[in-house]
Length: 340
Image (cartoon, rainbow, N blue to C red; front, top):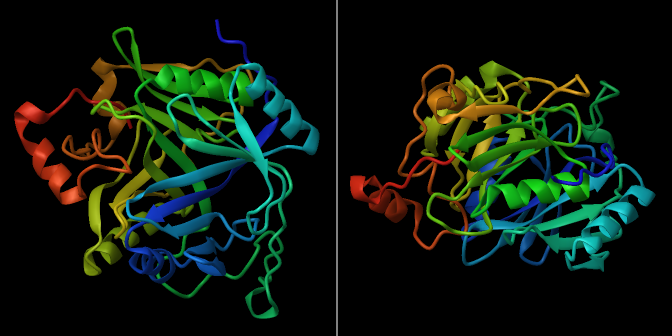
């Protein structure tokens, strides 16, 4: 039985660092096509935010030999909550380090998930202050909606790939107070879990790496808030030679509207059209999907999530996206499906 921590001590996903071997092309993707604002630069890293992100940045692009996730940080609900969550991690023999070296954020505890993902917890965060030319007349909007590309509003969620979904899920539940809203099982094996610290359907998901790998990123998702934007974005990506993996459609799991693409550096990005199902019921039970329900779980509208990439490709990858797809397109090379 997993010992569940008190809920609401983690507020939300605050930021993600993406590694890219093509940093300028990755930057162009997020600024020219997704309308993100550049807010800072430090060496080989550039900081960006969506127009409704509350902090100086939600996305950091760092030049690297391979694609992948540098780290992801969750903001706690108070300074005391940060200390308690760190105490819980350490009581579970999870090692970590304190630092205060990220633009716009203060004291941060960095550690690894049971599968090796680089994660962090932070409380101190600057509120973004728009310069006069970017101030919005809408008081709840941190800055004006950009007039470039089809601009995303904010970062939405993170999906991790792992060799052991249950171990990662139980760590988020026990040490961070996350609730698992939905999961997928294949017999006795848990192959996907969707977790939240608030009313959203999920802010962190974890799916089994069908190749047996550890500690990879499946995707980072950004929020539009409008189904039509996903359709418009798909058209834009076609025009600008951005590889579309699947969508637009709607998942059965979370009921979120999805569009999956690969940014030029090789990382998978999801565009979330609407928030999906909100979890307002505090005592709701975790919904468990079986393999017999898998088609509905993946896509209500019938879109196909390709075996040769969606269930097997994560970053960092030992192969390029093209080589990976060629290898896993062979029927003998296809492992069993994982999850969405």
